[in-house]
Image (tube, rainbow, N blue to C red; front, side, top):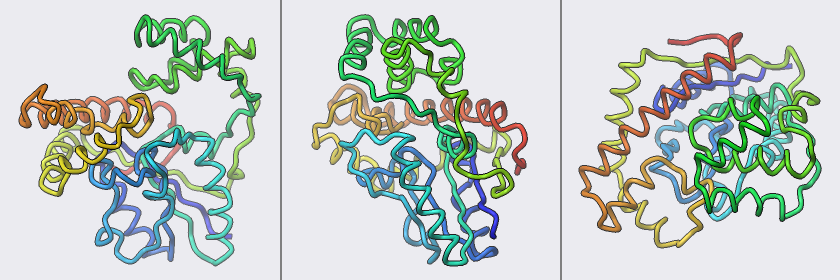
Length: 288
């Protein structure tokens, strides 16, 4: 049986190119493990690999979901499990690559089997966010489930809403549900690799890449997504760059301001990813 390779790393760390090189060497196929690269309308702003960058290596679960869908780690697991089995059955090496650490955690450690929540549970949590804001929602989440909340990168309303709604609806914190889990990938069937370049080099790459995004149609892509009039709390609408360019399109800031703000927000996000990956994946092989 071939070993499944999991490649994680912060944004702009060179994961995609690394995965392609590995796929050529191991006769592999690449599977997306990035929460934003699943969305069909976010080719440029999610830094989804282009056809040329794929270099004729089969790529799976990229750009196949409408941005109107609330795609979650549970959706991804249901898609990726049979896909890995299929790749292995054809004698190929599955190579999973992305920056969404929670996808890898669910795959290698398991996903909690939480009962279906009533709509009122999420509505009550959403009311806290709508009325009192993200800080109040985080404060409530910390009261109900400090362990799960501590793992959230920045102000992530979708996951904070989940923590609050699960605790209030089931009477049991999400972190306790997560303790009773089983990994999708059996121990010994996979290898984890974390790409962690020097931070200064990473930040320079981030700035250069966003400049490339603008040249390659990022502004036009943002206009297209904005014209879809999607709910602002959808996961796809959290893409860094989309929010900043949308503010420019609406006349709120200049293009230069939008670009600088997007670069700064991406660097901050990469810093949080860097810290999370180092803490949550201590036994994965490091590539600098």
